[in-house]
Length: 181
Image (cartoon, rainbow, N blue to C red; front, side, top):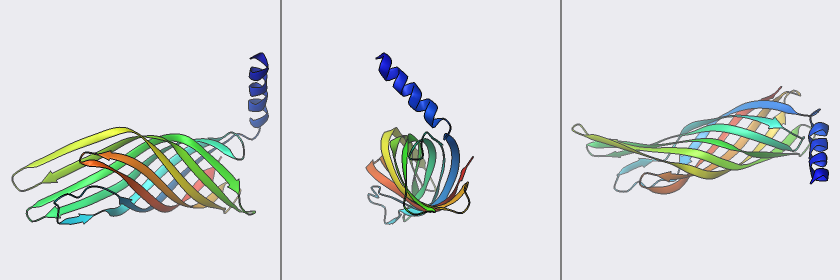
């Protein structure tokens, strides 16, 4: 056990000279796979965003936190309107590999605290319900280094949700920027 602790401490100390904090944001197209039920109109796509920050332990391994807003699903029927929304606060790991001198690929996995809301209304009445939980997520990204600190990114993120009227998933395809300190 003593050797394991010494080896772990040596590894942490040897990587501390590399340790790097980064932040980023992504804006893009979202799609939520929800149960539209009896609604005659159901637009499952919208605009969403993701904000994230991380700590690189090595050039390959990072710990990350993120907040993702998957936009809104718009529902309609004669005399009724409604919506689904989904957000997630995630914690996980990111694994980055260089693909070319200025190009890198990143895979993300983790768990997120999700919040899915369902609302409907008419002229006379309205109602809403929420569903939350801890769900897995994953993502893939390509980054192009514009400078040593600033990268342009293209990403795909998938989040599982438990919605008030069933379960499904949400995706975000986006572009953004990442800045390393």
